[in-house]
Image (cartoon, rainbow, N blue to C red; front, side, top):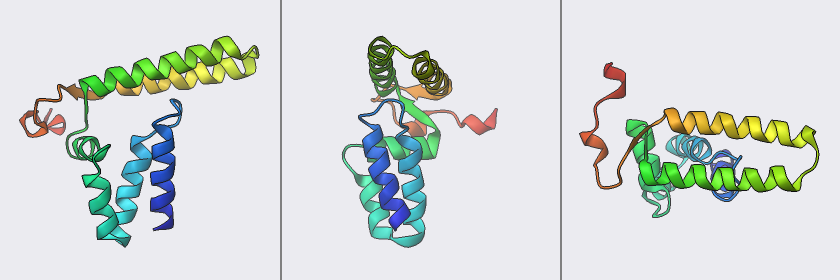
Length: 127
């Protein structure tokens, strides 16, 4: 339970801090809750802010196109502000590398429009 709730906290914090991942921590919380608390697991996957996205990612490995675009826009706006504000290349280079890795992962992840049900998508493991 403790690891699950800690992961929820980090995941929610990651919604505001662009280089801090959100989905992996929330999926970790789901795994922890599946073993320790079915009630907490139901809460996580039915949460109105991120429940649908977690279910979609867990079941189909898809990110809604709008969420993907918004995530990348916020990521690069924040990274750009950081690179401009921080004069040290010892900070700039690692931050830019992390942003590039996150961008590559998000770009490689399948996407769909919000109005398309994930069940209508082809199975990514079938190819």
